[in-house]
Image (cartoon, rainbow over all chains, first blue to last red; front, side, top):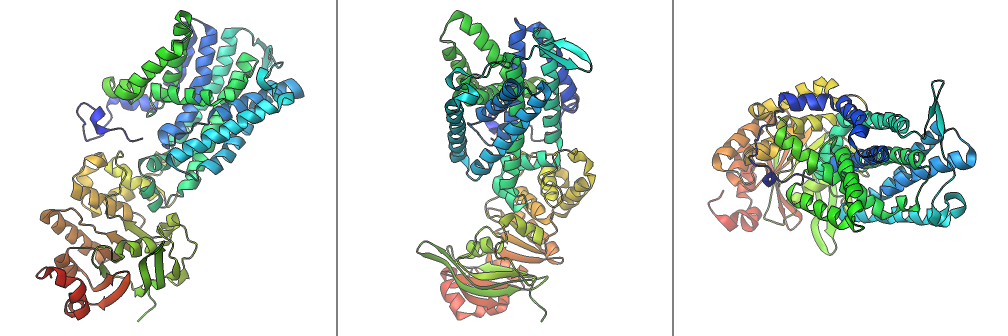
Amino acid sequence: MTSPALAEPLPSSVRKPGRVKSLMTTYRVPLSIIALCLLPWLLPSKALAVNVLVYGVVAVGYNLLFGYTGLLSFGHAAFVGAGAYITGIAIGQFGVPWYAAVLLGVIGGGLLAFAIGALSTRTRGIYFSMVTLALAQLVYYVALQASSWTGGENGLRGFTVNKINLLGYDINFLDPVNKYYVLMAFAALALWVVSRILNSPFGAAIEAIRENERRARTCGYNVERTKLLSFTLSGTICALGGTMSALHLAFVPLDSLHYHASGMIVMMTLLGGASSFFGPFVGALVFLVMEDVFSLWTSHWQIIVGSIFVLFVLFLPKGIWGTFLARFVR
Amino acid sequence: MNAPLLAVEDIGVRFGGFVALQSVTTAFHRGRVTSIIGPNGAGKSTLFNVLSGVLTPSSGSIRFKGQDLKGTRQHEFVHRGIARSYQITNIFPDLTVHENVRVAAQASRSRYNIWTNRNRFSELDTKADSALEAVGLVAKRDEIAKYLAHGQQRALEIAIALISDPEVLLLDEPTAGMGPEETKEMVALLEKLASERTILLVEHKMKMILGLSDRILVLHHGRLIADGSPRDIQTDPEVRRVYLGQNDGYA
C-alpha cells in the first residue's frame, strides 16, 4: 500500500517531521489513552463507547497486518470471534474466572491466527485475501455446526459477568461506566503493545516488506516467516478485542464470525487511515457513530455509510486521521 | 591458484521447453571484477538469479567458499556473503534514504525482535551512514527514496547491497538508464568497490566493461562461449561473430 504521490498537494521530498508531529508520535500511547478516557463523555451512549473500544482494538490489531505489513486479510473476524467464543465458553461452561477466560480467548485466537496465517501467508495478493476469507468462513461454519458448544445460529449466551474483583474491590460490571474503564485498560494494553511492535526492529522489517517484498528478501529477511509473525500478532490483538466484546455484550452472535464482520474491520481501518497508529481507532469510532446515527433515520443506513466509504477511498485514501495528520499537523 | 570463492558446475536452467542456461561451468576468485556480457536473452540475468538464489537451477551445483548452496533459500544468500542489485531499480520507495540502508543493515542482526525500540540499535545508524558515505549519498540522507534522481537511486541500491558487507557483489546493469555523467560517477564508485571485494557485473556498455573488468564471460543462447581477459575477448572470433560484430565500432 504505497500512498500515491499525487495525493499530496506539494510533495516535500525531505521527511523531517515538525515538532508537533514528532511529539505526537513519541507520546502516541499516552495521548491515545487520554482520548479514550474522555470518549464516553463525548458520545450519546456509554454502550456505544464500549463498542468503539472493542472495534478500535480490533482495527488497530488488524492495521498491524494491513496498514503496516501490506497484507489485505478478509478473515480477521475469525480471530475476533474465536476470542469471544472461547471467553464465553470458558466462563459459561467451565466456570473459569473472567480474567483467565480473557487470557484463554487471546491465546486461542492467537493460535488460530497462527494456523490460518501459516496457510495463507504462502500466497500473495488477491490469493492471500481469498484464502483468509475461505478459512474464516470455515471457522464460521464450524461454529454454526458445533451448536452444543457455541449455540449455533442463536449465538452464545449464558455467561454474564456481573461483577469483577479488582485488587480486592468488587466492581459492578453491569454499570456502563465501570465496564468502559475496565475494558479501556485492555485497550490501553493493546495500544501499548502495538506501539512497541511498530517501534521495534520487527516493525521496520514489516514496513520493508510492505514497501518492497523482493528487496526485503534480497536484504536477508525471511519474508514468509515475518509475515506469519505479523499475522499471528495481528490476530492475537483482534482476539483480545473479541474477548472484550464477549464481556461487554454477555453474548456472542454467530454473525461476529461472518465475513461481513471481516469486511467491516477493513472498512473501519481504511476509513480512519491505514497508514497511521491511531487512525483505525478513529475509523471504528466514525463507523459506529455513523451506524448509530443513520440507523435512527433509516434501516438502509448501510447505503449512506457505504457511499461515505467510497468517497473516502476515492478522495482521501489516507483516511480521516491520516489526512488530518498530513494536512494539519506539522 | 587458490580455491575459488564462488563456483558453478554444469548449471542448467529450463523454463518449460525453453533452455535459459545450458551446462555453464565457471569459477570466480576473490577480489576481481568479472563482467558477464551477451546479447539480450543470452542468459545473463538467469545466471545472476541462480547465483543469488532467486532461481533454483534445474541441474548442476553452486559452491560458495567450498560449500554447496543446494537448498539454501534466497534470503539466506546475503547472510552467507552474496549480495546483489537488480536491473530495474529495487529500493524501498517510501522510506528515507537512511531508512532504506538501515533496514537492510538490520536484517543481519535483528529480524524478529518485536519488543526493543529500534533506535536502541544505534550502531545500525552509524553503519548506514558509512554506507551512504561510500556511495556519496550523505547529503540525501533524509530524503524519501522515490524522489531521488535515477542515478542516485541506483547508488542507493548499491549501498543497500553493500551494507551486509558481502564478499561477492552481483550488480545487474548498475548503469542502466543512466546518462554519461551519471555513468562516469558509477564507474568511479565501482572501481573503488572493486579494490575491496569480488564484483560480478552484467552490463551492456562495452567501453565501460573493457575498462573496468579483469575478466569477461560471454554468454550466447544460454551457453558460455568465451571466458578471458578483455583483450582476449575483443579478439575472440566467436565473440566478434555473435556479439561485437552486431555493432561494429562499439568496442
